[in-house]
Length: 252
Length: 343
Image (cartoon, rainbow over the protein chains, first blue to last red):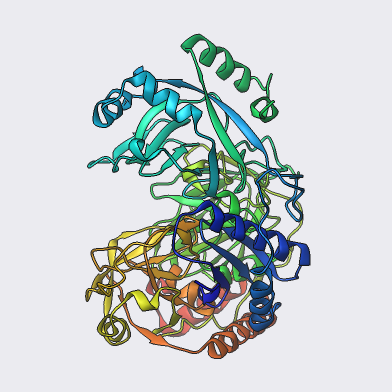
């Protein structure tokens, strides 16, 4: 499919690459985002990369729609980076390069009430589920739904389950959840229909970090690291008192 | 911060602090938020001499009751019932589109909001810290406003410095446009049958009870997806004004607090110039839509900006006090005892 322009109302323009979930497609989106951001055009308020498209929110009284459209089509030709780790990115305040993260998670029990169900549905042991999830390098496709909420993928085929038939009214903040090919962490308490496997002490959205309040950004990669209950409590306390900050979760 | 303070005495319906919103963070999942009707926010601010996007109180259905701990001046944009009780048990009208003084100890009571939304601006603005560049309240994630929530009885609002000591009024309240809401085809227009598109442009839709700052769910004709495409897309960006249609065929118009991305096909989008009218829409209201071109949408934005500028330029000194004199004169002539109530 050739990249094409779609009008999202009269104040936004979407560059659509395709309608699929695919890391290669997402890399193209990120490359286009970087190419466009480098132009530093006047009149743009937001540039939003998604799985498979890039949307620019702009003021049509300050920036000509057709000119912006041409810039987007040009940006669509930007070569995607070989790996999420290659080279710096421009135009994103507070960011130098894509980041590899290692995010601690306490699995099961009250932290992950669906772990047993997921093990049963996939005919594996709980340990196998945890090991498989933690062995997978997950790609950050998109931040959306809630401030700082990452859409991560892709899970091993056998771990892909449909959403809960009845969503929970309140998923606790910091829950690690899976559905389909995706994993996510809820930065806030919210309704949700995904399977809850564990909880992280990491803050996914931190207003104290004004340069980049969302921990993750599209293009980053995440690995989950299993921790015990005591370690979770210790880390959660250290996060609460700001003894440790987000740099603690960078991959060594 | 100036020492002026307002005490919220009562706030039965959600009243939130809103300004121009929080652009620049949508790639982090942070909604735009901000005033549902940016034009009325601008007018309320202009009436008290504030910069046009200064944070003010956004009121829907019912306003708050508040007391001036120190003297302040304020203005209301939108149509609502409002009065001031002074320390001696005297009541005076607090008409919209005028600025008014509130002396120490005086109470402002804003009752029913008849226009769907209304703004209460305080001269000097609200002394609240901006969060990610905005004081707009986004309650779901606790951003902005007072601790990220709607106002509550007992809240003390500091007032910023500045604003005009002069009372102003608008000789002619802004006209509320009628007629169908103008739309352009959405990014997934092709996901819908031609019959669905025709229905969108020819039938009436009613704003349902499911209406909040995130969006308006509409009752009316079903907008069917083309079976060749279905009702799901891989989530991509949305914006206020977009009309998305889930599998049940019932359209939802997104508003200021909408999520940054969504997985439903978007059949159309209300143009920017008509967004304030969506902010004024109430459950039960009938909406119609008409298609316009991108060029017409742009011309409409220019026209709306020009109209707003003219409206602000037309403001004249002399707030409610002068009007009260006029009403008093009218009483003498008409023999009406309480012209304010009759108004």
